[in-house]
Length: 317
Length: 304
Image (cartoon, rainbow over all chains, first blue to last red):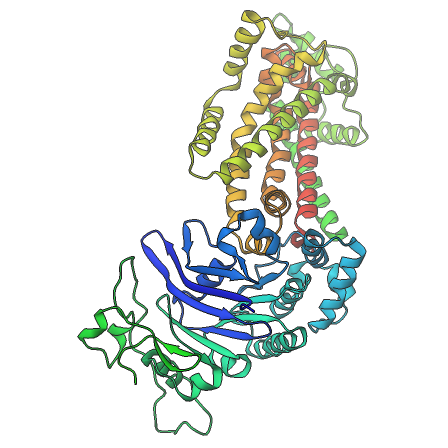
């Protein structure tokens, strides 16, 4: 059986900028796949490209882009709209602005179900109340009649999660769902996502730049850098045996209680992600990499460290 | 919601009171009313007689409070020229002006909202630029001139529409169009700007991520938010149209309130002038309140 979501060599360009350059990843049913990387590396664009929600001027191509075996590249707007919010749902980084200020929570939650399933308003409202309870919102009946501005950021993100689950999706794409929230709320939302993922058997593509989150919830991790997936492995494998210098650098940036010595400074990666135009050759990380030499300006062939552990670096062992 | 209403009502009353005071002062600033009423050939004793007859010999403050006291009970005094009650005069003329204003506003909204939405959806295309050009021309064209042009083309050359009077609905087509033309530019631009802003917002991305239909995204989610400033301005525009129809009522010889105001100014019928100013101001204030209320209906964040 094919993977739930299969992305092969996805390219996204915005005019003269290549935002995603040949990124490949798969999400299996019931698996949490984390996409990590620093700001501007193309994580969000990748997720938006999968949903075909790119902003104006964005253009996507791919060798393969299938969901449940269906070719998303062949779907027109109408066909894609049939899947979105239904079999594949998405939640965003900005809970404060992602709900329409003019409509009640209930109206926004029920409309997605009424759009995709043949159910009465009554059934949709019951499901919405049920899901609000499931995402830990007390007094769901009251919340359904409230407007977004009457809810805190954490509550709004819970509403977004509940709304995404209305049509029992197979795949949930969560684009940095906790970044805009308080630290305490972040932990709650993550626990909630992880629990829902287990209970409902969701395939989840979780985009984050927080490796702490990855360690806790991911089955599989893909590290993105400058529009490429530079390393991909099962979570334990990646943390135990990072191959790509960028992955190694990322891991050094995270303090590990007990392992970190007081007198040893926390690691950091010098420089920033380069702006990459079309036709860029070689390793995108070479300007920031302490191992880089002349060969890094040539195209890097994919390497395999172990079954299911791939990386993009000719120098790493 | 109740507090919101009460607050708006208090502001409205204060504005109305200010306007009453101003209307009273301004009519008296134009000169000695007794002299202008008595006419150019009046003797000094005639003027004194007029002054007595109309109570203009009383202290100004007394006159003012007398007028305000009557006005709040609905008694706006008698016209010097028509020898009838001012309230009757205005009530007779109001339907024409209201019909004209509502025709103008409806036409304006019917034109500008679809044009604004389409221009926003096709941002930076030739359609968008054409709409902006129409808006610019509309803004620059004086209404009396447009009125005359329409009269020449549709009234005289083509003979499709009557050029003056209020006999049938056809009489309101041209003046209504002229009034609409003055409101279309602002309303179109507001709709366009609001839609562009809304369509770029996060909640529209959410709506798209929910797989909603294009119609639902545009009309339910985006327009609802884009309409908030449009509604506010539309209500104010109706006020402008009712008060500013003086010119159009002249051009098309419509006997509305604007026409009455013009006549009364020419004849120094100052109770009528004062009353027309007051009535239009009250309507204006009421429309502003209606616009606030509509805004609160459209935007739940304002209901606090």
